[in-house]
Image (cartoon, rainbow, N blue to C red):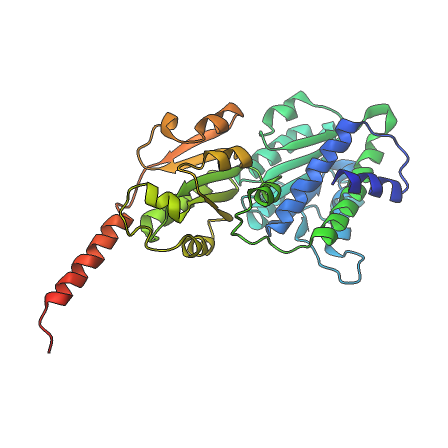
Length: 357
């Protein structure tokens, strides 16, 4: 992504020399937007004051890309033309928050172009977006302690480099470079949503980069039942994207669940999990625990169902050491694969003993 950004800066005719850390932050923001789009999430763009029109500068090339085979991205501008054309700094109260509630869902991105003049209003908007599970990408004229205090762990902010680029130029620059970079990158890798089943951890690591907050859970999921579905839905609610680590057939046999377990192969179990809307990716691990997979993916939230203590959960140390959290979801529906299998066998045995006509 960094090489694309540098190329697009040059192609668009910008001559400013930007520091390496700023270019890297731009690359991370572009990667976050591209990853969200590939996962079929939305980019919602807004701005305040003189920066409001930059929402259109970012969105227009994305929804109408200048390519031979255009593919519009799900980019939505939340600021109507009248706001910046008439110099009005603010929409009527409730319009912006209403738009967020109508269009946004967890995992979407809110991209904001703004300046310190509108900080008090902006803080309320950001809190509303965070309550909906949105990640904030902010382009701002200068640092602001009050604003930084409300940004979440996964939000990102870029400021104008000061004298090297006036704030009005900075917002236009960022909107144009980001739009060009996203279009170039997505033409290169495609817009298609990645397959849910990803057993190559290197590929999965790249696919989940930029998807934050990322949740991980694991299990056997031999015969999917109501308890499984509830646990997975609860896991997904802990973040924006969910990766499920699935015990391989050999790993299940080592768990001592019985000589004929698993009932379903790892390929079948993967396919069933991939059919759930709460699951974004499924990946098989062959070890006794998913520790190595967790180390590779570096999730933000680790979820386990049952009555575990955090220190008993494989990978909890990896997640907590980098500021993540471990969540234990109590069993709400008393179901188990073992019980279901026993009932099927008992019913079959009774049917076998019954007299035939």
